[in-house]
Image 1: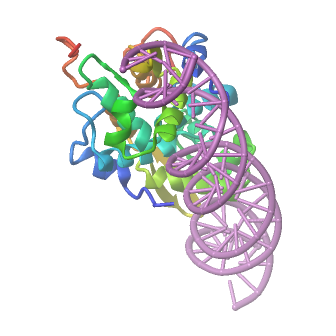
Image 2: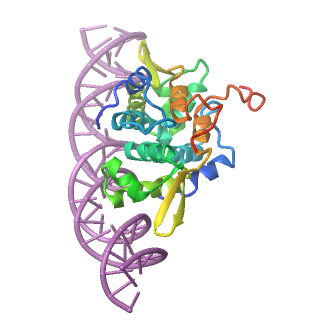
Image 3: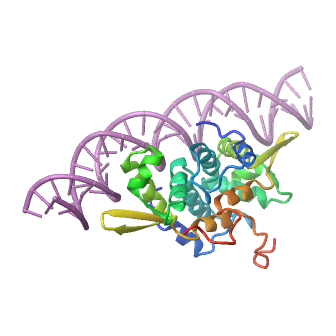
Length: 125
Length: 125
DNA sequence: CGCCGATATGCAGGCGAGTCAATGCTGCTG
DNA sequence: CAGCAGCATTGACTCGCCTGCATATCGGCG
């Protein structure tokens, strides 16, 4: 697998079935797994955490390599994966590339995992 | 790999810092990544979904191989990973092994991903 | 008691993922 | 304009993971 692309966007739009209702389709499972795979890495989790807790909610690569203890190319690589998964957005200002969290991206994933307890009326099993 | 063990249990108890607060530690990131890694697989997501939507909320291996289109050893392997991650529990009745979801396991993960319960105020911006 | 069915485990092959060094690219800056 | 700093990309290496085949284990049945 490679092109996670805007996986989250494609996932959020067509109302991918969450883990709570009927058995999910193979395609939905693969999409959800793709986004989760982007999350399921210690370095990337720390990146998200670092960026989220940064002064303006944003950070550039040069601020992230040191706390992670990883090389700059590796950090760029992880940021790319997170961005393609729809979890981060990139803004280039001058020489620096600032990354920030996509507002509700992670919350969306959390909702997909949580059984439909408050979303009544949709699919009463 | 480095067996996740009862990762979720160890994670739930010591109140692992979720993705919303301060930068998370390396150890926390690895534990959370471990559980997410167990989730980040299409076959395992479908397994969870199938078991959850089964008649009694439980299913044995023989019921799961067909819908997944995977061999029995492979399904057993995935079930093992999910169980060791703390997402499934196994009960052997006679010749069959019945698997069911650990009640609040997935919800716990969702909570760890969602910003701290202090969603009322602002978000340090 | 021996056979059969349901699972679990060992082993191996193939592929994808994480990491770094080297390199290319772009926009400041002197 | 030349040089440099910040990032992205490429290539290569290693390692972990998914999968299936073969086999071991365990419980029930005839």
